[in-house]
Every structure is written in structure tokens, then in C-alpha cells.
Length: 161
Ligand code: 4NP
Image 1 (cartoon, helix red, strand yellow):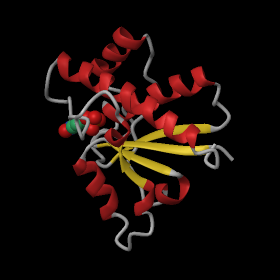
Image 2 (tube, helix red, strand yellow):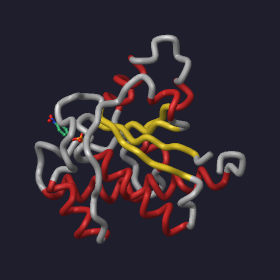
Image 3 (cartoon, helix red, strand yellow):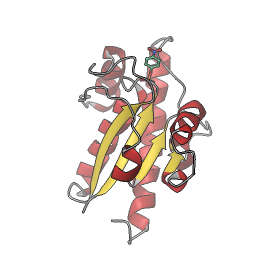
């Protein structure tokens, strides 16, 4: 059984699809395609069914030459059972996810993605939606750092992969 990662933001059109696609790119490069699978979701229902935001896609294409695939969906309670690790982009996403787990049964599966950064000091991936190109570029830089750290973390725990 592959190890299952779920990336979560608010709308599932900017940060979490970028994280999912960046992680898939790193997984492919590392030859872990059979061992780790990725998905993403939003805590809100605002953009269900939408493709990644074109500004996020442009930033990913320009900075990493990768295309963003995906269709927005909302985070649901069954995701707690279906995924091994759930990565929130910011504190608000983190709290909204844990709100759906009142007994704390799945708390150990939920982390802030910036916990895995090593080059950046930011604790959250800032919401780029109402800002300009710089914000989208920062999202890409932070997520490359975080996803590299996450992959290192997973491959160092040999029971995981
Ligand atoms: P995301 O960005 O959470 O990174 O997908 C946002 C997308 C949409 C909205 C906010 C943030 N919105 O308010 O519609």
C-alpha cells in the first residue's frame, strides 16, 4: 500500500494543488512513484470543481516548468481515514481540519507544511489569492522547500515507505 499524503488549503485552487503537483514532481524524480501518492483539498466549498488558479499555474510553469493538474474538492471527514498525513498550508486551515475531529482521534495525522521547511522561516504558506505575482512566486519557493523536507522526512523513516 502506498503512503498517502493530502495537502489542504482554503480554496484548493492555489496553494494545495501547487503542493500536490510539486510533491509529485519530486516523488517522480526520486523514483518513489509506487510508494507515495498525493491528493489535495480545500476546507471551503468556494471553488469545488475548478481547475488550479491560472496565476498559480503560471508561477509553477515559469519557476519549475511544471503544469498544475487537478480539480478542486472540499476536505471531508473520510479523508482522516483515507490519508496517512494531512498537510495544512496555514494555521486557519489546520484549525478548520481539526474542528472536524472533535475527539482528536486523527490529530497525529495533521501537520503544518512549513514544519518541513529548512531554508525558510515562515510558519505558514501565505494566502496569495488577493495579492500579486510575488505572492504566487513565494508560494512556489516555500512549497519546494517544504516538499523537499517532507520527502527527506518520509524516506528517513524506513517504516513509512
Ligand atoms: P487557496 O487560495 O486557499 O490557496 O486555494 C484561495 C483561493 C480562493 C479564495 C481564497 C484563497 N477565495 O476567497 O475564494
